[in-house]
Length: 248
Image (tube, rainbow, N blue to C red):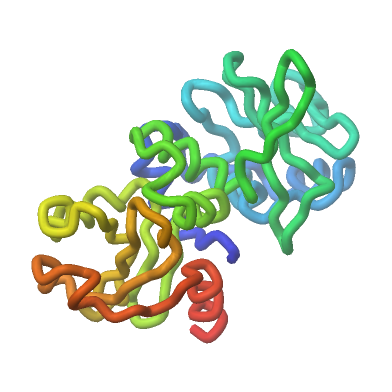
């Protein structure tokens, strides 16, 4: 799924991990000049450059495009290119994160972390938008997410806009929605991962063998029990959401 710009902007505005100011984007000619040297940039990262230009994640700078064609290795993405990798971000602790230009899915490429001692790489996100989402989840104490399925979602996008005004939640709003509907008290083994825009909540289990099934239950009926009162909706949240978005 493609990251939705409005949700990505919302995440950036609310994230305790991300610091960036809208309206300070890089000029389009500068972005194109960089792409002429390194090839096409992933869509969500290109959007970030055009909207924000620069920013910090957990106190460390995100690579940007040098103005006026000036190439400064310290902050310019062209200077940070090493073969099919571009140095994206490095907090000096966990090992540098890089854009993997040989690992594309549509308009997005993966973000990998390189071990500073062994040189081995680990995939940490499926897109730049996913990188910001994952760092936000960590900063909020949500770790990878409430279950593996949501963790997979967040590695790609900061949430999903569904038809009819519904959405799947990103880490910056999921606690707020769960607290608003008393999920922890009424359904402690479940997590509200989204809503259908018409008063229905999308629930998944936090623990146990089945952490892939999604149940639909009215948000005013959580106290009746998700498993007994909820309606099974899908066994594959990501595929279901992708189909919903495609038909929107």
